[in-house]
Structure formats: structure tokens, C-alpha cells
Image (cartoon, rainbow, N blue to C red; front, side):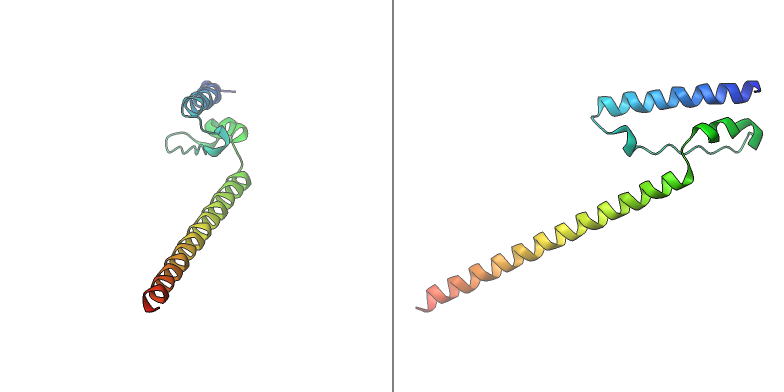
Length: 102
């Protein structure tokens, strides 16, 4: 393993430790953080150990899909809550109208 590869894998461990520390400080689940590594200055051989140690694209896709599904459910709950409030408001107005008409 060359020096760049060795430092990149130890660098990855350092970054992961920093992420874990930050998550702990902010009471956030470490698995909710996605680390994306991009390199323009090193060839594939130099960053291959980081790719091997890093998360897989399928894992990233799963996380993105899960996050999108959670957001969709959150929007649906919000929409249902808005509809419920609108119906309650409408019922109150009808009730008030009936009381005033009597």
C-alpha cells in the first residue's frame, strides 16, 4: 500500500471519528450521516482503499430511498392534519351557523 493510500485510510478513520463525535454532541444518529468521498487529484489506485472501506452505492441508494419515503410519509401526515383541521373548522362554522339560526 502506498503512502497516499495509507494516509487516506487513516484519514477516513479520522473523519468517521469526527462525524461520530459531532453526532454525539448534537444527539444525532451516526447512521443518518452520509459521507461522500470525491477525488479529483488522486488516481483510482490511490483512493481504492477508501472506496473499499467506505459505504457502497447500494447502501447510499437504500438510505436515499428510505429518506425520501420518510419525507413522503411526513408530507402525507401533514396534509392529513391540514385536512382534519379544515374539516374541524368547517364543522365549527356550521355549528355556529345553526346555533345563530335558531
